[in-house]
Length: 384
Image (cartoon, rainbow, N blue to C red):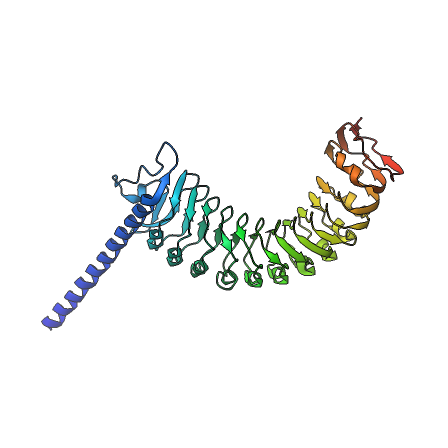
């Protein structure tokens, strides 16, 4: 009996010792990882933003940009945006196994995004935007299965958008990869990201068509694919995205008709389709988007008349229709339009009737070349 009690006591003591040792080791690992990060992160300013990282009283949890949590005070956030840091990102960051937020945006880090970040299985927010990282988007980041936000825009990242993002990061809400040097096609797997609210891939060198699978992301609010080399039609199931507030497809090689289903985006505020090769007419359904503030369709191959209903969009502030083959009537009367009447309106060479009456325009009437215009109404404005 005594031997059994002694054995039980020894086991309890051993377990407690192992428990304490484990968390002491974790503390040492966190501090060592932070010091390794500091060793290769170079301050570009006069003041060292990491000056507090010096073993001061209170420990690393009181260091600039570091936040700890829990009984064992593990590092859960490293937040150092706009701190003037340059150099490379130490692979030791991958040892911060309790990290939930890593925000190093608006610095000057360069080189590779370390593969060791894949060990951060509890990471929710990764923001490395506005640096000069030049590696490919690491495929093994998809091991961070709890990621909600991945912001990597404004770097020099190259290669393809990993299809694994759409197959593994099912809780992702924000994905921004714009303003890089990414090539290849937009993965169809991104349509699996049912929680996504922001998808931003603009200003890259992506090619191919817009995957119709993106029409499955029913909760998306912000979609920007502008200034790539995308071609083909705008999928008609874009009309499924009824929570969309912002759609920017400017500066591609998209062609065909603008689908009537665009009018089903009833909460859309900004629609940018300029500088493509869309043809056909402007769909009448556009006038169903009552909250629209910006409609940009310039520099396409659109023809036919301008839908009368555009004039009934009371919130419209910016309307771009230049460099098309449009004809007919433009009725924008009885709105709250203000500012100067743009000189670019003179590019609507086939316009027959222009009605800007009962608005709040000011300034002078532009010397527009409206040679086909048989009726110009600008009454009840302040234009002179």
